Length: 306
Ligand code: GLU
Image (tube, rainbow, N blue to C red; front, side, top):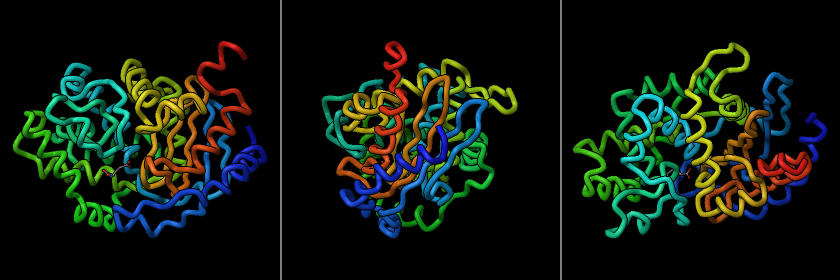
């Protein structure tokens, strides 16, 4: 895969930016330029390829849920995590309340807001500083910081997530520390990354948790397997099924416009395109990934027919 190919993929995706809108429910996010599009691809042991607006800093938003999940699995283990959430696609929007209503005891999965807030409670003792250094390490990006303006903007418009957090408390899934948990969840959503940082994280996951350059294991193999499975089945919210058919790669989107995609055993991909569809997924980013996956036969099931 070279730069000329990525340029073609971005040209294919560009018109789709017109079909979506930047997020506005967090007012600060509405300042993004919806026409921007960029990509970074990091093959394991190969040359990094980049194109378009790949080095724009934007907030990671829900892609933080991937790191939160991996860290919680790593530190507290499988049972502690899946005591808090199920492992099922929710088939509902990212901040749905209906999917943890009276009839459901626990959130559907760790990659929707309700599940992620429950997971972040586990990470309370790690704290913002500990999590920041985990994000910097896993994304090989020492420049990740918290975007204070985005944090304040979301924090002052967090009624929905606050309701979810109190609902979780009423079910005994989080304790007395609702405010602290929600603050940490929101701070982690406000970390600034680039398509390059996401590609680095993707490459680490593609390589089973071992950093290819140093040979250092940062995540256990089974942590990576569980995390990638959750991304494949639940990473694009209520668009996860269609995305799995069209692209077929474990991926996670965020309302900041990022998509993290992983080609297991081969490469990590980071995409930035802040114009979103109605489900909160980058509208053009999904098309770019579809173009790449189809052309290069990267769909995980293609490997059996290619
Ligand atoms: N911080 C956002 C929220 O909790 C993340 C949502 C997303 O990226 O999908 O509403």
